[in-house]
Image (tube, rainbow, N blue to C red; front, side, top):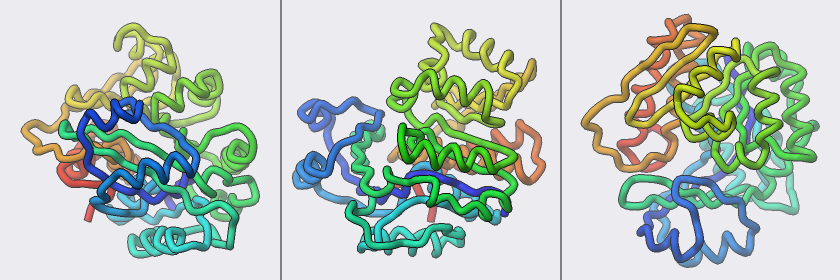
Length: 309
């Protein structure tokens, strides 16, 4: 197996809202907020659902990699409930090996409200449910050791049981990749994330907002300087400014695609990572890998949701 993804197994509930809805509910546009089940259900009761689909950041990337013909797998915790069954079916349909055995749990399968505003930005409200209770016993040792690399998401890193799962996977793997996931995650775990990026990861994916927050950079020049000193592969997406790969003194840039009809930015970073990693594991050059990432992210933002058909 080329890549094993480990992340929060979340079912996405996609809804379209006006900006005022975010203001009324004290939500910050383009970020992710964790809520309990009561608050989640309260918000859900006020919304019209457009689509329900299996999601989760790294899971989206892994599905993208599978669609590009790569041998991939995923570990994520769901309940043996209706949403959990749908989640597993969604992965199986996409030819992703799912290394988790569902069982009846007290907490339900995790769910995320994806609120799309008229400017195509997405704001997420997540009830983690059982996904947030992943622990080291849920990590399939054989699957980790038999994969060439693991791909983790910042969303997964949390004190307690999730961290034990994260650490076990890291200890068993040769090549470790992580996405910083969200500025909310970066701010919450800044010192731990900085340690991971500097000392434990081989490849880090981040958008400009996340990496600037992590490094307390006042400008993108400062981000570049951090990347050059890092000595590991750092991939940064910059929206309409394109993307950048930095390793040692080498800086490679790729422009974004122009004149796209942007519908929904959900999954843009996830599918970018899928495209880049497809290139990386199939011996593309760094520039070609960035271009593949750009192609994949350009396709996903022209449709609703984070999975390509």
